[in-house]
View (cartoon, rainbow, N blue to C red):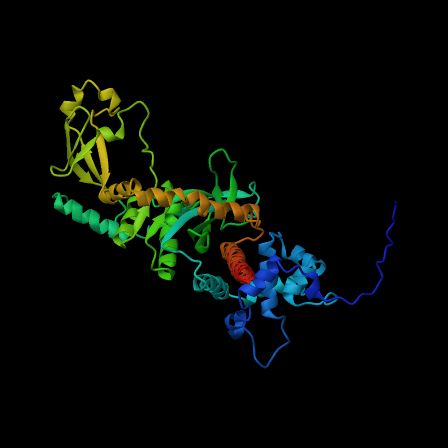
Length: 471
């Protein structure tokens, strides 16, 4: 039987928002997970107590931005449109069905000019603290990596620019140990003021649209301007901290700033798990000297194809020489400015060597083997790689940091950023990570509460059955 429904679009009804939002809705779980009135403590100093126009509730502004990040909405304008039409969003903000929501420009202005970096950092730290207080954080083993975010910049609008090479954080310590090593071998120490004739400038491609982004190309991907979010998470995928840089900054360069931040916040960290891009002498030295364990994978040596393998050149620590595949000694020659000891073969021995074509193409018939003064730390990291603890922690990367990056791109709209400038992109990334942590915290709290409820119901039913059986 055909039934045609009547269109009742102009009918007045008395409804309650509380009854229209499902009990298991995500925003209900988030609303129960944390006390949003804490935000007033973070922004209280930014408002005048007894002067000026009445402001929009700062909690509402933060909730609107959280909605944008939780549901991967690409812009604030679109977010306000969705909030106007969505009953659950209105319930979360505390707005009635016919009540106008704040204009998107109001939100944008407050987050650009009113709420500072310190405010965003306090919100991020507050959500982490709530997760830690609930017992969900596990920072003993952390996972570090970086992911690129496509910048809001035209690839065709670019220019070449010469910039000074960035000074390394460990440069002073390295030079001190280089000079100590040279003195121990009877060499003259380097003058720290001289550059050794090396150019201190490098040429890079700069976007004229967003000069703070960096040119990025990985594998077969096409060139694009991008930013990179260097991120640390724990084994439960809670994001512990992040540092945003230009897309042309290597992971090992951004390591120091991120490592300092996360270890200051969580001094109980025991193991730091990273990929091969972080396997440098300085990073291994810093982690091991701090009493922590670096969990790093195998890194393929960059040797020339068709030549002797790297492991055929054996270092003799007692004699401080390198033994080549033909069992000839390569004595110590010097320590260069980059911290590498150079071991050079004797010319008359190499001239008569039958496998010289597999060893060197030098016109002087000399083979040079280099070994960093901090190479012992790399060897310690190799030993950890083969240990049960190293194998176990590195196997978790695909379930932790790689899963975080996959979720943020697929579910939270972090493949590209609509903002320009390092500061604005950094705040945008930190708010997005705060939303991801908040969602995970809310889901875990809701599941824990319901598991306890169902467990209590099961116990009560079991006791009732026992009483019936006894009767």
